Length: 347
Length: 268
Image 1: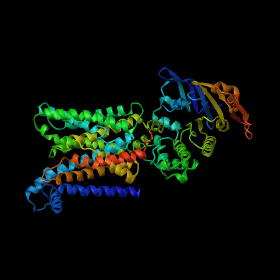
Image 2: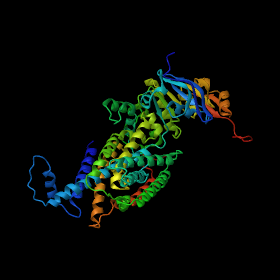
Image 3: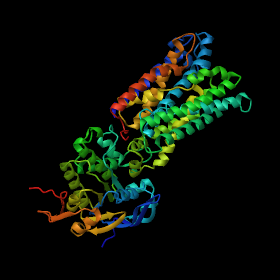
Image 4: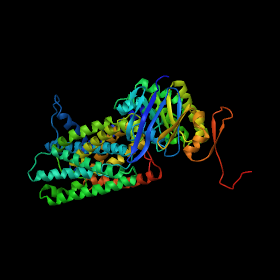
C-alpha cells in the first residue's frame, strides 16, 4: 500500500513540474512567479494588481495553457491506451502506433477535415468521432489478422500492424496532398505535430478522452484476469467478450481523440507502460493510472524539447518521441525475444 | 442415492464433421474423485472444455447442483464449476497471492475490489494447498509442481462445488505428482468437493480415483470403481495394446503394466 502511494506521489509531482515548464517555456519565457500570479488572477475573490505585460496574459491563456492541456491529455490518453492494448493483446509491443490504431485514427480525422474544408461540415466535434471509427476499424483488422490462427506471436502482430497502418497512412497522405487549403500545409501533423491552436481542440478532445480514460481506469482487474488467456479468464468468471470489447472501445476512443488533434504520435504508448511495468510490476490496476500520469509528463517533456531544440522553429513532437522510442522499441524487442515477460509465453 | 453434484447427460460435441464427444453421460457426487481416462483423442479434454464453455456443444445437458450450466453466464458458472488448467504459459510476473485472489473474480465487481471474505477464502486456499510460504513469489519463479498447486489454489478460491482438472500432472516429476494428487484427494473427501480429473497415468487413476470413466472414441465405454473398469480386456479394447493388470501390493487397486517386448526379444 505504502509503496503504491509513493509511486503516485512521484508521478503527480513529475506531472506538476513538466506542466509548469511547458507553460513557462517557449519562444517567450514566462517566469514561474509570473505564471503563478497569472493563474491566481483568474480566481474569483482575489484582486491582484497586474504587474506583468499584457502579452504574457495573452500567451498564457490563449496559447500556452490550451496547448499544454492538449499535450497533457494526449500523452495520458496514448500511454494509458498503450497499456490497455498491451494487456488486451498480451503483448508488450502493442502500442497505439504500432498496431495501427494511430494511423486509422489519422485517416478518419483527415477524411472529416477534408469534408470540412469543402464546406460540407462545420465544427471540430466530428473529427474525434471519425478518428474513433478509423481506430476501431484498424484495431479490429489487426487483431483479426494477427490472431486468426491462434498464433498470437509478436511477429504476426507487428507485421499486421505495419501492413494496416502503412495502408491507412498512404490513404491519409493522398487525401492531404489532394486538398487545397490548410490541410496540405499541415503535413507535419502526420509526423505528430498538432496543427491546431487555441481552446477549440481541447474542448473537442476532452469528452472523448475523459470517457475513454475513465473506462480504462476501471478495467485494471479485467485486464489482469485476461493475462491468463481468454479460455482461463472465462473459467475464472470474467465475461470475456464484454470485457474485451469495452477495453478496445475505451482505448480506441482515447487514442483517437489524442491523434485527431495532436497528430500521429508514436511510441509514448510503448515506452511509458513498459517503464511503469518495470518499476511497479504487472498489476493493471496500477499500470493504467500510472501510465496515464507518466504519459502526460513524458509527452509534455517531449513537446518542450520539440519547441526548444530548434527555437524559434518548432519540430513536430512525434519526431522527438520517435527518436527516443524507436531505439527503445528495439531494446524491448530483443529483451522480449530472449526472455518473455508478462503473460505472453504462448507461441 | 443423493443427487449428483455434477450431472452430464447425453453431451455431444462436434467440430465440423468430427464428433469429438458422442452422447456422453456421467455423474460426479460430492466428495468423490472421478478419473477420466482414455486413449489420446478420445474426447477427454473436449469434455472438460465443453463443461467450461469453450467447446461447441451440439446437444445434451449439464447440471451442477441441479442448475443448468449452459444457462449460466461466465460469472455464475465460475461459482459452480472451477477448472484447474495445465500450468503452461502462465503470466510470470503476478505473485501467487495475486493470482489466487483472481480466483475470486466471480464474486468481485468490475473493479475487482476484494472484501474481507475474499481475503479469507484466499488465505484458506493458500493454506490448504500448502502454498502459504510461496504466496508472495512471482509465479514465474516457481517450479512446475508449485505452479500447478498455485492453480489448484486459484480454483479453490472460486469456492465451487465442482472441480475439473485437465491433466494436472503431465509435466510433473513423480514426487510432485503424488503431492498434487494427495491434495486433490484430501480436498475432495474433506470438503465434499466433486472432482472430475483427466489423467493419462492409469496407475495413478486406479490409486486416487473413487470411480473411473473410460472414454473411447467420444463415448463413455465404462464407468465404475477402478477394479470394475480397469481390466485387461477393457484396456486392450480401448488402447489396442496388450496390458497386464495386477493388484497393488498395499491397496489391492489395479496396477497396470505394459506387456510384451518386440517379437524375438527377451530380458534375462
